[in-house]
Length: 451
Image (cartoon, rainbow, N blue to C red; front, side, top):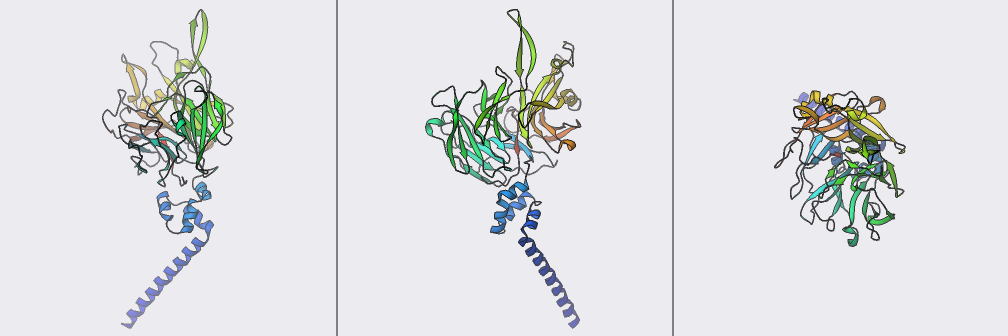
């Protein structure tokens, strides 16, 4: 009996020693901030969010700008998402994971982080390095409310409304946020000038000052410039030339370009600049017995990924002179993926995608007319950059008929099915087998940034 008590006592002493040793190790880790940071940097984001409640010190550490930057120095998309229903109330969203094939929990299906006083719900206008710019859904501009939302931390901020006399003149709202440069974000409002309706005026909201202010002088913009059609890249807000429908859905259209440039705003310098477009001549027509070259540009995709800004133009092969234009030849196509130099010195073709090669694996993208190939049907959702130049693993994500989403490696040209969409609502697909509201996807980037 005594021997048994002795063994139990020894076991309890051993457990107590182990617990004391573990407690001492935990105290040592907690007191060594550099070591603690290195551990927390490798903790999954959901666990990290729970760790914020451990202590005030941990909360301060995890939410500090330095830690946020170390955690995600180059914002990288974990998934893509887009609205799948445009009914009278809140639009719903579907997510496409870019990594694990077994999927990942969607951060949200509808946006209900705040009660919008207009009662029509909230929609996403723009995704920028982990933050979302949102607005009242299907609301008149005079009453529309704007929000900045972090879907990772579930934090949100309601932007103060600009002066009432200017609200109905708003042409676009754009989010500018670079966690590498600053923990604060800015929202750029472009509205009609009060002195000349042909000119535009910029107002800027700062999360640091929590107020709006007028920036610069009124300026002119090329025809078809859409100020809601924005990409934030290289410290600048870039506007494109296309259109946005009444519900602020993102639609790229091919338009005739009379002035071969678009506009961008250097946010810190608050200066509007011109950016020449990548152009090409595609036709020679006879006009009053004079040959005249017509210049067009059609962008099927515009987007930013990991510090690179891309524009994809769909280019028929006979225009490039690779395939003679003949009625017996199918309308083969290339997709040119353009990238602009960071110093704005020019555009260059970074990648080329041969749609006929994709059709060999996914024949459903072929569009037939009179039993012949007359083109290809697909909607480019995103260009995702991965890896450095020597280890380039970048890929293109596209939607094809039948609700499939494919992943096309831009380097080794391999391709695979990435996801399958879930049809929602009446007439989810159009006559081509794509989503009826065929718009580009937003990037979901995990972020600890405060709003």
